[in-house]
Amino acid sequence: QVQLKESGPGLVQPSETLSLTCTVSGFSLTSYSVSWVRQPSGKGPEWMGRMWYDGDTAYNSALKSRLSISRDTSKNQVFLKMNSLQTDDTGTYYCTRDDLNNSFDYWGQGVMVTVSS
Amino acid sequence: DIQMTQSPPVLSASVGDRVTLSCKASQNINKNLDWYQQKHGEAPKLLIYYTNNLQTGIPSRFSGSGSGTDYTLTISSLQPEDVATYYCYQYNSGPTFGAGTKLELK
Image (cartoon, each protein chain N blue to C red):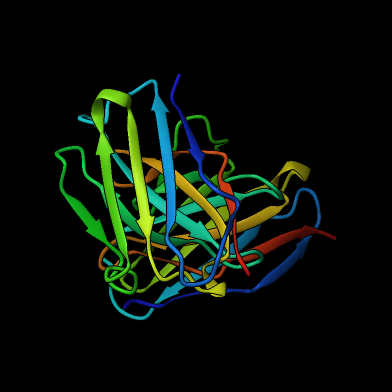
C-alpha cells in the first residue's frame, strides 16, 4: 500500500538549515509527484514545493530563495532543504503524494520541527 | 497570490444537520479547488477534488460545488466522526490553502 514517512531533526537552531527526508513505498517517484506541505500549530497548511515525477521542481514563491527539493529514485526518497530558518518556520512538515489532478491523495504522518536556540 | 477566505471560522451543528462551509477566492480559480478534512492530531485527508469530485472512500454525505470565486462544501447529515477542521485549497495559481473552518458538535 502507499506510504510516506518524513524524517529529520525535531529541533533546529535559528539561521541554520533544515534537512528532511520523505521515504515512500507503494508507488514510484517516476510515476507520481511528491509535495512538501507545512503547517504551523493551529494554522492552515502551506504548500512549499513539489518534485514532479519527471524530476522537475516547483516552489512556493515566498520560499523559493531558501528552499531546495531533490530526490533519489533508487532509494525512493525525496529531500527538502531550507536555509536561514527562523522561529516562524516552526511547525509540522508533511510530504504528500500528488495524484494526476495534483491533489494530495496520500500524506505522511508529519514531522514536528521546532526552530529555537 | 490568491487569497482563500473560509467562513465561518467555527461552526457548531447537531448530529443530522445539513452543514455548509464556504470558501471564497480573491480571484477566479476556474474550479481548481480541493477540500481537505483534518482531525485533531492527524494529517489532512482529501475529501473533494476539482470542486465536486468525491475522493474514493469518502462517504456520499460530503459534496462540493462552486465556480469562479465561490465554493461550498456540504455535509448532508452531520455525523459525530465529521468533527474536524476543513480546509479549501486552490491550485489554479501559486497554490494556497484557506485558514480553515472548525466544525464542532452542538
